[in-house]
Length: 193
Image (cartoon, rainbow, N blue to C red; front, side, top):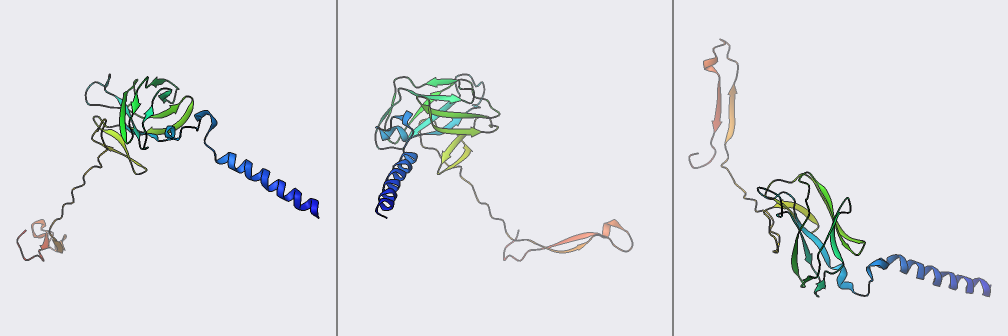
């Protein structure tokens, strides 16, 4: 009985250490610096107005409380064609834009990588000219480009119209005289429409 209890305790100890390892950050990220995990893809402009050359970009946002050195960071496409950030820093709660290689207007997957570890990715579909893909609160949407600035949700204008009712329809008179056909509208409002 005593051996069974000791065995169970050892088993639970070993099993809990394995579970803890499964929840750890990937070893290739060198998790000593948690600030490495505070960057995300924030905006992608694959189809700028006019010629695309040198105007397409990917914007990265640092939502963390410390600056991050972008050495060893890169943006890659689905064919593993990458562009490095070189020796730049991104301040806390700030943006940095990387004007990239050619982005396809009809869709592509973009990756943000540290060394060879994927930190974030975004798969976009067909892109409208002059409109960027923007991230906000776990959603992507198309809007006016805002490089190096906070993304702005599109403003939706709600237009209300006065109530008009379809009151009567007379589509087929007996004498087959089409001039007698009519539709009657009713205005229940206390003003003219």
